Image 1 (cartoon, rainbow, N blue to C red):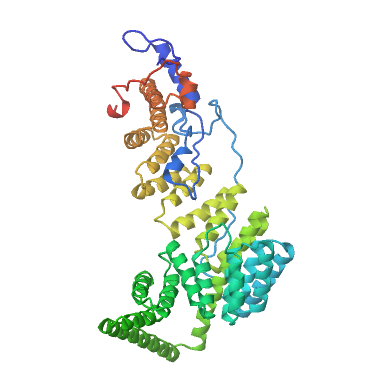
Image 2 (cartoon, rainbow, N blue to C red):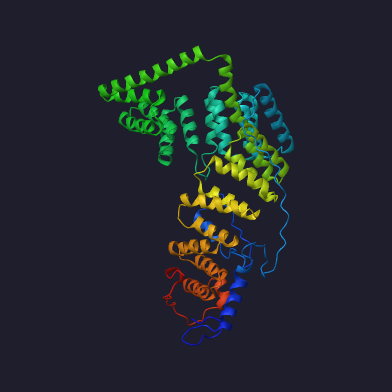
Length: 516
């Protein structure tokens, strides 16, 4: 395959004019683009690399000591002004006044219902809130309205069915759940469990067994579902099956009275009295420990201590409520509402990753990159084991021209890079922008060895070009062409491959194998 470059002379050696032409081609294609790494939330490292095609690399060596942002033609670019950070994240959770917080949640829920009267998520969120606050009738009313809007809404059906079962209205629970039986969407483990329990509570044991067995086939690791199934299996005399089912539930969720008691029955009915006796002793020990804990708690815990436990439970309810409310704001493109809800969630739980990430995404969308950077610093502090958090923070650092932070963040990421080259690739680009060409070339060469691709060779070419080594850069571009001659960047440099072209022969002097 022949590139659209001037022909070489003297057994492949380039003339000074050809070197200059090659350097110009390299500069137009590579140099002068601001380094921007695509932030990632739910992307895999492989998907991340795919987003890096054509990513920018570095200023030329002439301005290496004080790199300036440049446009696609190599001229100085004017970057938009980035507002300074104004966000102030809470360091400690807000102290809760239970009565005031309950009133706040109910009032806020009512305001949102008035604003979005036919919004399913708003109705469902408020129904869950009232159910948690033991305001059962209001929760039932709201879930019934949810089902009017969407008769196949399984979450609403399960929530309503549980309320019916708690109040002894088992036939109503069965009716609500059976309305979803014909749904083409796979049912959840809760749907099978609640329907099985409603049948069991009405004495319809065979129906309960059939439902629970079907659920267990789909959700073999759902401990709550298996516990109910094991209990029903003992009631129909399938003691051996019950034993296996309950042992699996214990393996998944640990020994509890709910799974040990029916297991004892199943063992005794099979004549395994020694095993049953051992389980009985274990059950007694668990009950004794629970009784002792309750007694000790009652003796040691003041009314304030009990209140503290209740406060924390209400705090979790409130945080969940505000996170859901932020989703409603986002869906309706109301950034002020979204921000207000997320900030309230953070006041209650400053370590909530969901709230932090939501607020960070919102700030990025509003170009409040300094605020977003504050958020992602906190995210990284809360979850330092997550590689993606390093990429997100380094991205924001680059976008705010904080290259020192980008470099330090990516160097820290090297230790936990799952593939060994994602952070290296990003760091090489940052080093190029900072004029650290030797570091950039070493990192880029490692990337080529670990992941030989068009992206990797273009990156390595840029490091050579920035150092004034046009010949090595040209070899890298040719190697990229050998890997994928159809790549748009390759075509832009060499032109489309000839129709009769066969597979290219790999070059012998690959730059990464001949360090300079």
